[in-house]
Image (cartoon, rainbow, N blue to C red):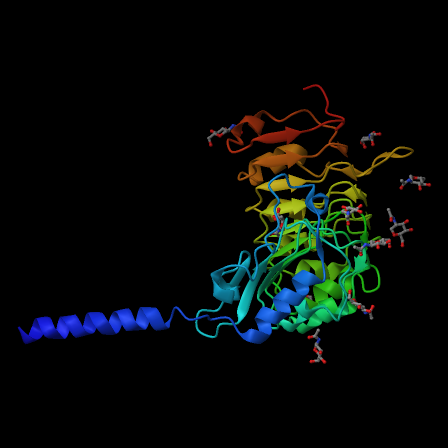
Length: 331
Ligand SMILES: *[C@@H]1O[C@H](CO)[C@@H](O)[C@H](O)[C@H]1NC(C)=O
Ligand SMILES: *[C@@H]1O[C@H](CO)[C@@H](O)[C@H](O)[C@H]1NC(C)=O
Ligand SMILES: *[C@@H]1O[C@H](CO)[C@@H](O)[C@H](O)[C@H]1NC(C)=O
Ligand SMILES: *[C@@H]1O[C@H](CO)[C@@H](O)[C@H](O)[C@H]1NC(C)=O
Ligand SMILES: *[C@@H]1O[C@H](CO)[C@@H](O)[C@H](O)[C@H]1NC(C)=O
Ligand SMILES: *[C@@H]1O[C@H](CO)[C@@H](O)[C@H](O)[C@H]1NC(C)=O
Ligand SMILES: *[C@@H]1O[C@H](CO)[C@@H](O)[C@H](O)[C@H]1NC(C)=O
Ligand SMILES: *[C@@H]1O[C@H](CO)[C@@H](O)[C@H](O)[C@H]1NC(C)=O
Ligand SMILES: *[C@@H]1O[C@H](CO)[C@@H](O)[C@H](O)[C@H]1NC(C)=O
Ligand SMILES: *[C@@H]1O[C@H](CO)[C@@H](O)[C@H](O)[C@H]1NC(C)=O
């Protein structure tokens, strides 16, 4: 009998605990920072026109969930501290300027921030971003920022993934790619496609040996692909397409045995022709025999000048192959 009374009280205690943890987690200062950030921007469906499923995540903030900002759409808090640690406002129809006085930069516990697929009306990325020093993931893809990437962004040294891809509006020149990779040494994912870098590949890029995903498509890059590329031994996705890389593709690329996605296409100059050559011993045959995990292979405009190897059919995971204008020979 006393055992059941004990159980009964335990159950009451449990209910009390559940009820008390139902009070808002959210800190007042962070709730007001979120609301002021929301109010500094307008909601405009065409700001997220790239994503047909876009909707305004901020529209119902403050109207629901008893003001507990931790329950708002796109917001996630640390369950113990109540601080906002994730803010996913991708495809949220946000439109307007943003600068360093934005209350977004008061949310200093953020570890994950996505503002992808909105329209910040060609604002410069505000230097206030450096206040978010706990960030591990930052995604500003297609969010209509412009100008130079500010040096302050390179202070976010904990970043593991950085996506600044967009349509030729951002520049990474002063500082350049070299400074970025010297400072952000924890990167696993780096997507800079369409960022105008206009340099050659710095040697120290290949010091980022934890990198799993690298896209430098359409970055206005030139020069050779360095042989130190074999340092990227965790790389799964490599896209160096649509630049002005030239010379031999180094045979060290064959050591990237985890690669599933390889795109070296369209390094091409209409007055000179194909800029990249794949003619080291073995050529395409070595690629096919060494990089057996490939799912996607695009070498269009790489000068291969050899026949198609029989072993191509052994790449059983391949779902995409393009060898357009590769100067393949008859076997
Ligand atoms: C909505 O955003 C587009 C750009 O995506 C802009 O041209 C237009 O002026 C904006 N409309 C309003 C009412 O702000
Ligand atoms: C967007 O930028 C244009 C051009 O600078 C400016 O006229 C317009 O007021 C800006 N719109 C917003 C909502 O900031
Ligand atoms: C930053 O933006 C706010 C609101 O959009 C504006 O009032 C303020 O003047 C801007 N500050 C600077 C330094 O441009
Ligand atoms: C960013 O941090 C600096 C220094 O800690 C502080 O003075 C500034 O107010 C912060 N900015 C914002 C927008 O929180
Ligand atoms: C950035 O966000 C876009 C839109 O949500 C997504 O497609 C892309 O994969 C994200 N990038 C990274 C590196 O996660
Ligand atoms: C890229 O940057 C270079 C050097 O600053 C400049 O000459 C070129 O016009 C830029 N390209 C584009 C498409 O903006
Ligand atoms: C990059 O790696 C090389 C060789 O391991 C090393 O000598 C160099 O100091 C590294 N550079 C940076 C900036 O870490
Ligand atoms: C193509 O090569 C020619 C000759 O070297 C050069 O003048 C031209 O700028 C190059 N075009 C591009 C788009 O790089
Ligand atoms: C491809 O390489 C071969 C052998 O070096 C060369 O003769 C040919 O001109 C090159 N073709 C193109 C389109 O670069
Ligand atoms: C394809 O793989 C099989 C099994 O690993 C091997 O016996 C065969 O020689 C390979 N074919 C070619 C053309 O390399």
